[in-house]
Length: 114
Image 1 (cartoon, rainbow, N blue to C red):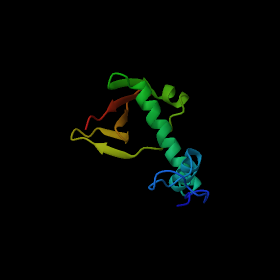
Image 2 (image 1 turned 180 degrees about the vertical axis):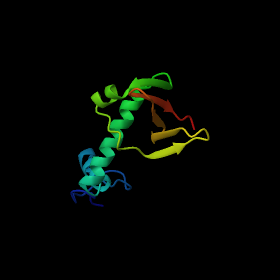
Image 3 (image 1 turned 135 degrees about the vertical axis):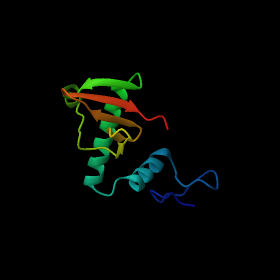
Image 4 (image 1 turned 90 degrees about the vertical axis):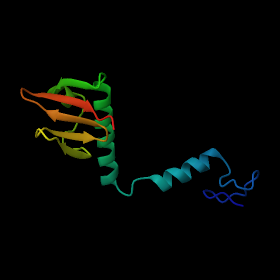
């Protein structure tokens, strides 16, 4: 059998697909890369937003100023879904972390424990 990445002959187990870790990593990175720059950029913004919400919401429910989130690099244009509760409250979520815009430049951050 030959390595799926470089084509070298594989020595070892019969079910081995790669000759070494570098070839395995290169092959998998190539297979899993985003198909274009737009997708990669959107995914990076979602990841950054998620990380910021996770790091600032230590207690499960946190009130923080919008300007502080802006300063951390949070982009309010990127989220994964919107949830409107029965009382009319609208939360924008990035996966399991959500936020609601409050009066006076504040944001309420919550975590959905689903």
